[in-house]
Length: 224
Ligand code: 5RP
Image 1 (tube, helix red, strand yellow):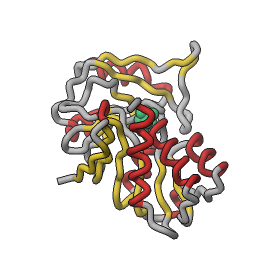
Image 2 (cartoon, rainbow, N blue to C red; image 1 turned 90 degrees about the horizontal axis):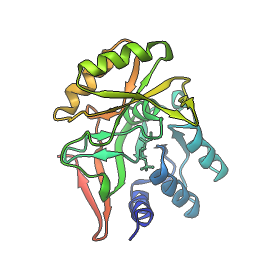
Image 3 (tube, helix red, strand yellow; image 1 turned 135 degrees about the vertical axis):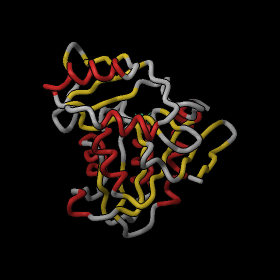
């Protein structure tokens, strides 16, 4: 199976966790786009969704679903999202789609985090994939210097010669060279740097369930 077929397989299984008349959290990215397509195809009878990005909100609204502000929704039953990397403890690196801050807020407000991923995302040690960090624009250079002190090689995320701007109006640094053996500690340390809005380590609040798709099928891995 190609990677898209695996993403679809994981996304389809996530429908098992969607209950009628609930408000669900929906993440961002190509795997989640398959999940949104499945919600639409199966005409899921959710009450509404809270989304982690402008892009996902548009897909949900175009599919006929109500998209609520998190402030109006209260606690969410589930949050479904992808990952760039995920380890056995279900700690993740997220943020390739620049939506990490809203993703972390919606995840925190959800009772259960369902991560949907293909097998290429499952790693023994986090850190081969660059760690995304959302920064206040005026702090970019200072934060970069602090990340170098932590052993990282930060790079300012650009597209077509322009800075990528998040839905919150901030910039993204992608940090390479970090071997992340203690993700909880590093998540906390990076968030202490002045100018950091949020970092893409999801370890303090990792996933509760991983739906991991490979050619052998979709495995359900639960938080121990
Ligand atoms: C966006 C994210 C995505 O969940 C992550 O990048 C995975 O994306 P994809 O499903 O396209 O591989 O964190 O900020």
